[in-house]
Length: 135
Image (tube, rainbow, N blue to C red):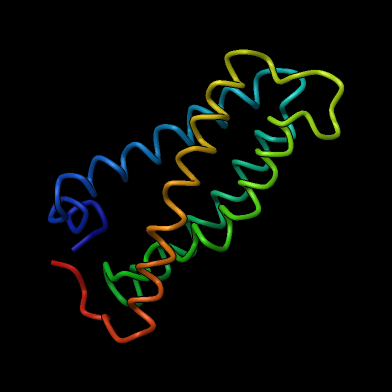
């Protein structure tokens, strides 16, 4: 079974959340990469999410669709949240991010900040023995 099939077996909220994370990440990366002033952030989003995807794919191929699947978020999205927060708070930049990118970067930061606690709980549950693959 592939990742898409395994995801389709998850509760609807997990499917919707997973697709939301992908959509907002791609939209924010694209908007940031094409707008001057936030291209570094766009590159950070892209590169850190490549790492995230590689870790997730490795876990899925090695262990299946288990609670540890979000480990890449913990590893790569924690520094990304810091990068986005600093940029959106205006630290180290004289100009605010352009409006279209700013809204998408805020949406991505909010998504990351909602996802990280879920991923932390799931990783802790896995480490404490809840290792059964999800359906």
